Length: 481
Image 1: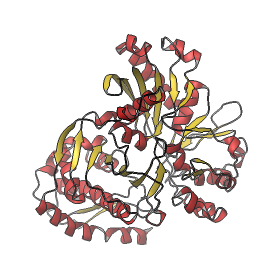
Image 2 (image 1 turned 45 degrees about the horizontal axis):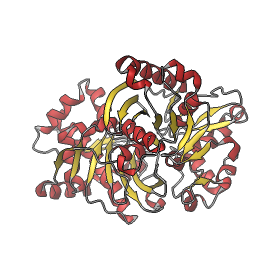
Image 3 (image 1 turned 180 degrees about the horizontal axis):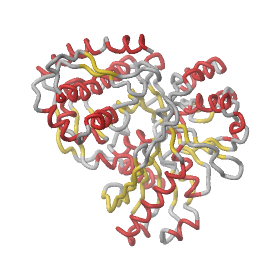
Image 4 (image 1 turned 180 degrees about the vertical axis):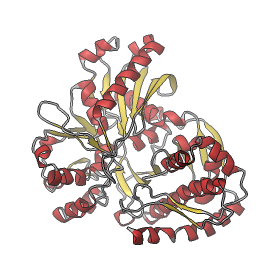
């Protein structure tokens, strides 16, 4: 059976046409850009998502017209937390406020004051990246827009509405709004009321592997489908990535080195640790949850450094790999941080620079700084009762053998490079679409392991010492805010 997965990311929208949940028949990708109209702001125009989706589907129709026509089901993976606001006529009221937008720091405290049970029910600290504080910011600063809101949609729900005409959301993505009762897997009326909203302004909830809608007749005809494909609930980007790498059972784990960084652990129950800014969310699968430690800047830190240097990332990493060591340190807080600091105002920087520090040494510091920040996440998960034994690695950073080895040494666990990691979100979405047609959990099997990076004892000891020094950077960053 053929299914289609769309992965609406921050920097690109990717599509994968998949046979039987494993074989990628054809894929496409379209870039997306982020607008920053003010310091700390991060937005995208939803119209750009739609244009990218249309262009990607057009490309798949050229590459694999017969297979696309046979598509039985579609699901979408999406960047989380974004506030996409539409009015009663279906008009988008403003650009989407993205997951890495930091404008609503003050509103986080206001939300928790208005709903004292927030941490207990949502399982999470109120952070500027989450959706609820964004809506309080809109109510305060753009009241004329707030008054016209008919629906609040996360990015993938908006794209799903464009494809099906139905307002539907699923549990993993909804968990990142602060409006979901995560243990009971339903909207919280109290949480919505604290933001001046009600359940009528929310999409209908389904499980990620459940049927949710059908592709509209108009779009079925436009892209030549033989019959309207079923549309599944889909997943937030990390939950979809988990399905793509088979992290669907308690104890399964992965590391994502994408624009953001994630340390993921699948759990059998709702296991929050808001004091350390651990994310405790529903999985995209029924009766399953997960914990995450989240960085706002992972591969984006290397992308920033490459832009500063005016050189390709691959060249910079190759230079760093030739070093024996670097004494430089880097704090990757370019847009603030989530786990464990929950501070959108933190900013990054280099430390311990010397007269002989080279460009390669500074690149190595960037790679190590992201790895140390993920070790912070590892410690936070351990405080929540989760100890990782091994993990797969996803995202653009997973292509760098040098970076993955550094990460294995810092986390002191084996890390696995896996096949098709660049399609993780789209592949996971395609698998959820297949489950919505009646397939079982067995379709979410782990991908082929290409290489396992074992932690090296001498490097583990060296990084333990460097990590202890690196941890002293965060208090200085807070003092400068």
